[in-house]
Length: 318
Image (cartoon, rainbow, N blue to C red):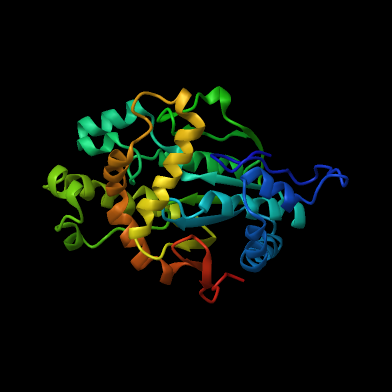
C-alpha cells in the first residue's frame, strides 16, 4: 500500500515480511533521511498514540478510522503520518494510508478560473478554496468502501496535479487513514477579525477583504463538513509564526535541490518570492496556533528546531 505526497510507501495488512531485513524503524529512518534521535523521540511521543489508534479501530466494529493532523508548514506533518502509518501496519497488522491535503490542490487551470471569478490571489495554491474538497471527499468515501481507489497526487515542482494514470491505486477498505494539512481543523474567523489586514499582502493586494472573506466562507462550508468526519485530531504546534518562514524556506531549498532540473518555470521560489508566498498562509497559521490547541485531542509542542518539548494531556476518544 502506498502513501501519498512525500510519505513514501507503506505495507498492507497481510503482506509477508522478510525477517532477514532490518527492523522497519531502521528502514523508516533510512527512507526519510532521519537521524537515530528521531526514533527515540518517536517511540516516546508517537508510539502510545499509534497504539491507542489501533485500539480505537478494533473497538469501533473495525470501521475506517479517519485521523486529522494539523501543523504549520515545515512542522514535520508528512514524516509523522508516515511513522504512524508504518507503526499501524508493522506493529498492529492494520492497513493504513497516509494522505496530504496538498495532493488535492486545484489544477492550475482551475485556480486561474477561480482567480478570474473571485480574486487574483487564488491563482496561488495554499489557502482554503484552492483545494478540490469534493475530490477529497469522494476519495475518502472510496477508501472506506470495498474496491480499488486511485489516490490523487500533486507535483509542487510543476505546480500541477499529476495525471490520473500515475496515481497510486489502493485496495479498500482501509483500516486507518491519516490525513495531514496545514489548515486542517481550522474554524472560520469572526467577521470582525477579517477587517484588519494581517500583513503587506493583505493590505496591498486584498484591501477590500474579498480574498480572505471567501477563504473564511470556505472554512464555514466544505472544509467544516470535511473536519466533522475526523475521529481523532492531532497537532504539531509551532512555537510561533516567526519560525514558519524559516521552516518553509528549508523545505523550498530541499525541493529546489531535488527537482530544479524538472521544475516548471517559476514554480520554484527564491527567498523574496517565498517570503511573499508565506504571507498567503500567515492569517490562518496564526489563527490555528491560537485557537486549535484547545480543540485537538493531542498537541505536541515544538521548539524552534522542531523538537517536541512537551505534549498536552491527551484527550483521545475511548
